[in-house]
Image (cartoon, rainbow, N blue to C red; front, side):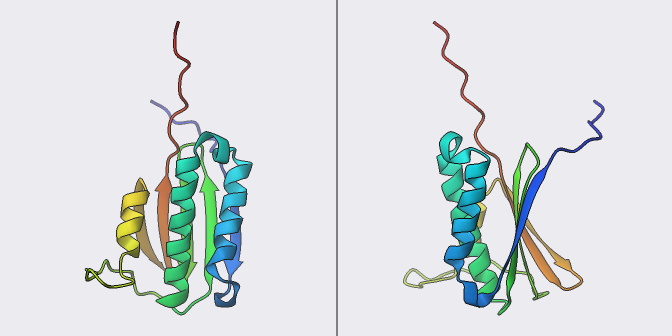
Length: 142
């Protein structure tokens, strides 16, 4: 089937210095998902996206010791959440001990996102997670 050559997408980007804190990223993300109407139509997906943003930005700040660039792109099929940092070291899933306070971030991303990937860039790396909102419910037939 031929694909539509015109890609319809909307996106937002925000730089997040280490000093800005992760709450800024969560609030900014929630505001943009509200603009898409997801607060009303896909509140569970909004919560999953915001939690994933929190984890990814925290990883950039704590593990990469880097500012983070947060990019949200909605292409009408998937919300791509990308966090870029200055480290070229790809993240690795760790086996966290039962009492450990950290080490579960990528496991959480894996559980929340429909898919995710990492890739090196000339000046660091991108971690991108894809979220698909649930299909709209069809009205019940009488």
